[in-house]
Length: 592
Image (tube, rainbow, N blue to C red; front, side):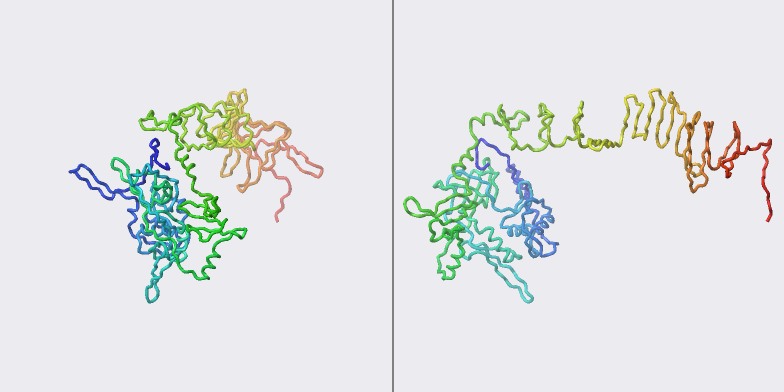
């Protein structure tokens, strides 16, 4: 809220505080507590471990880390990276105060208990005279503006310790004297540039108070003549004893901003050169808070007025005289500011926006009405709209974003419009562009389960409608008859450390065709084998190249011939048979 409104409420956190003193008084039946913010934990000595010179930002981060303070990360990113020497002999509290000094600001713990380095800010906060207590405003009519800054720094030489004083700005007007052992001239100049245009009227105000206001905020006040002015809230005290009272103040020692003194001709020339000339080369452009001397018609003055910037032009008035005329300002005109301050009507909207206690006895803001229109500029935080708050939802309105299948159930889905992309779940992925289907668990099967691919059991089966078929599981190829009874299988097999393929048939193994070839490659284990158990039927012609071993009876139906390769081709010689086994020898043996 920018000022007090009796019909508007706002809940404001005032921060996190720690009890430092507890004084129970049994006679008065009361207990008095004293509490402080987290600065109470920053009173121990700060010993830096950084390599120096170090940047101001790195020193600030080390102070926060060593003191266990949570920082406002965005705020700390804005701290300067200028180099400084090692801070020694300071507590954490004084050290972070010096960091704030380099930033021309102040250190604080925010309402959410985060360490920040702040400068004066203008929240457009106005305190109307109706909120003043009687004779509550005291205003110093002499404006305060910093004249110069000085800082005395000890410099250690080989033989002695000396004091060096750095100065920035003018030596006239209000002066600021700093204490900082690591200050340099460049750092002091930077500080002065940040504060040289600050100007305000010192004041003290006793008023109604508002917890939403912060120390360091600019206030818009109104003096006894009805003239509004802005001044910083440098000191702020709130008291609550059945009612809230507050004291705001900015008490500084003001002095004349200009000093009349003789200026040598050379200095006058330099001052004239320092005034900027506009593009036409006729008029001068000035800045600062002091009224430019000897202006001429058309001159422009950029004036700093508190936190606001104003543009004045030296203009001829209707009565023939000349004076500075305000053209524009960052401060809103009084009529517009008044409309903003009084933008909450007391009749129409208040009738439909009321505090309600319907839900849990607490006060809630209830909005009723038939013509509430939320535009695309409306922002709703994540995860606050629950399913009970949605009456119905048309999926045709969902045209962007991601639907997470892990959090929704979809039934009766018509997939004819799925044309691209990848459908993926926890254990299944279907790529509509490449046709690739990947799944990690489960099975694929027809309605009659005749064809089934079972990933969980490493199984693939295919059966005809009559019942016969096969299964492949764990490397074993098994055949079944029409009654789905196993009739044979093929599987890998190791025989005497000689790996091979094991074929077993429950009844017959039939190899039919014009030519059926079974070829065995060579291995390091020796001769490869084909081992046949049970009855083996070979129809038409069977050729075996290599060694044939028959373990058991060998019956031959038809001729039994020995094949000889001659120059006239292959010749068959009938084998002779004897009743007993004899060793036959044909040819001539000679002893050498």
